[in-house]
Length: 529
Image (cartoon, rainbow, N blue to C red; front, side, top):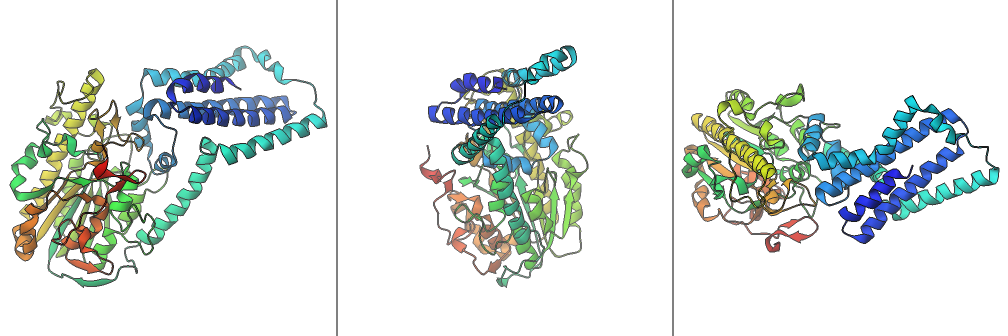
């Protein structure tokens, strides 16, 4: 029963830098092991004892394996936010996540955790007499009472002092918190109409708007922002036609935590604001025909937060809903966008959710179409080895393909020759060996490449003629902006004034005022080194 504990003690000593945290992690597993052992000792049936031994050994091995994986990969314990994300993640994303970080070291570590469980399985078939040690004599009532009291005491101490280290307790608490959060989102954001929206004034002119929501694309790997590779050949051709904002950050490095702020009134200081509503609901209230076109699966193990927001759209298309066993490239969104652009409505807003540069990067672009473009080592990469070379090249190829998709959407909108705009931003970025020996995104590993996102806006000639204030945007492209304020910028773009609208939080407004950009745990982004 105690072998996974031994693995944690040995490897935890090297993986967990904080001794207090190391002690607490070991203590939590000691208490769980004590409870499991007590249960087995109380069981009279030999068969049930044997089954219980298998179950408990597997659970212990799994708990230690999860802890070992997180400490080895991210340098931190499994967090509540990580559990939240698992709830909203589909099977394909789970497999991609683990395959992204899986290596021989992780395999050996996990194998060690399950060594005794594997040993028990082998003995079950080849040495069934091995389990005779479970056939001990009947125990006295005093022994049983003492055992029960010790188990209750262990459970009490675990819950009171080691709950942060207990994945089982954390999972239980997280499920409760998650259900509360999910009910909140469904109550406020899922319905097309939201009574919390009080429109004071709106423009009723014919208008077409497209909001492109990218995925995991950092401006650190974009040619438009000075990257040393040609990752934006198509957008570079159009750079005189759009405004590129240079100092925009995502509110979080995780998709769910980021978009629940970017697309609603929620922000860092008010994550569960009363009378909340989304950009989709605001567009509905302003008499726009709304479309949500996505290349991300709408449902994970549960319904995701972006999906709940999308539910409010009048027309919804999820290309990745049929199967998670194959890859759909973002170019498959183009025909759907064309259809939406051709509907009869004169006022329409189209929200496009890309798969973008989401890991696994090599699955995000069609190699056969020439997007396996970058091959060698990029001298800018901080940590140079064969693995980093491959990942940087794959990421840059994905960014280059993403460049094609965004430019095509702009061209489609431009061809309509209407009063129109396109806004593109990413939910967050990835650090691909830019500032640390790490690839991907994680809160504990949070770095500037994960927060620094692209943000650009394109406007048609008709839109510019009707909105003369846009002519001054070149003076504003260096504004310090947090994308959690996007709903105010969005409202500004569609010329809608609602009760609670704050013009100083719109990046497009002459009255914009820079605000403190708080990330992580009360960290000021602009003083963060």
